[in-house]
Image 1 (cartoon, rainbow, N blue to C red):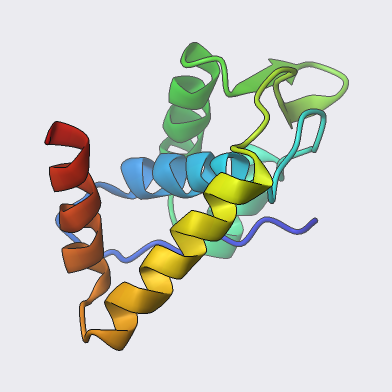
Image 2: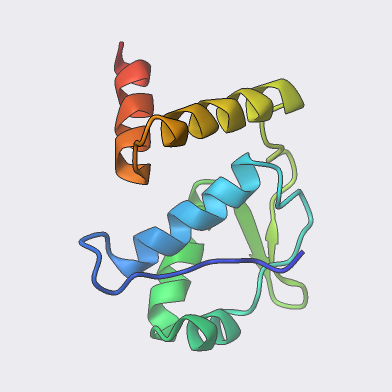
Length: 120
């Protein structure tokens, strides 16, 4: 799979955090699976128009969290045992997002609703 990541340089969220969150979302949604290779730091930095250190920090934090593993010969891959949620949970999440968008909520409002549910 080709990794789709976008960085909004006007966002208050630092670029490394945007990258980290998007890779984590791909893993959580099952779009990236154990053993899948991520682009090289240099290639992803070039594609996103950010410094290589920005991507390196995102990858480092993902590695610290056990989401990815970096090895000299194989590069950065999704770690074993990082399966996303089962199909029922993914379907429920899709239905929730569809319902929230149909109600006119934006992405930030959808995320706020999820955060509220997690706290409640």
